[in-house]
Length: 98
Image (tube, rainbow, N blue to C red; front, side, top):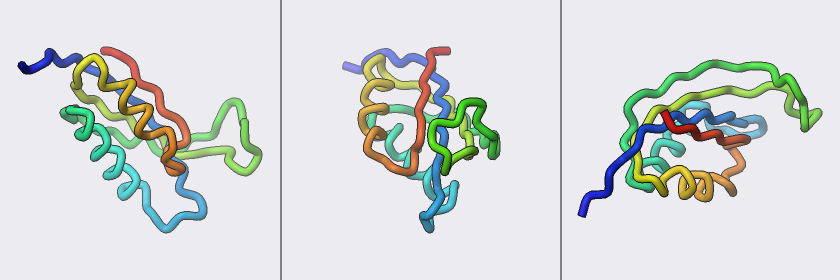
C-alpha cells in the first residue's frame, strides 16, 4: 500500500562553525535524511547567511538558512525532526505544510 504524500516546506538553519563540512555537505546529509523518511525532494533554495533577530547563543549570531520543498507521508515531518535532533550541524528545523 502506497501512503498518500503531502507537500511540505522545511527551513533549516545550518551551523558549520568549527567543522570542516561545507554547507553543501551538510545539506547533502539533510537530503539523505529526508529520503530516509520516504520523502521526495522537489526544490532546494539556499537563502544565504542571515543575522538572528533574537540571539540565544552569543557565539552564534548568524547562520545559513536553507529551504527544502518535499513531499512525504503525514508522519514524515515528525520523523525528520527526530532524526535531525541530534545532528549538531542543523541548528534549527521548521517544517510547514504547503
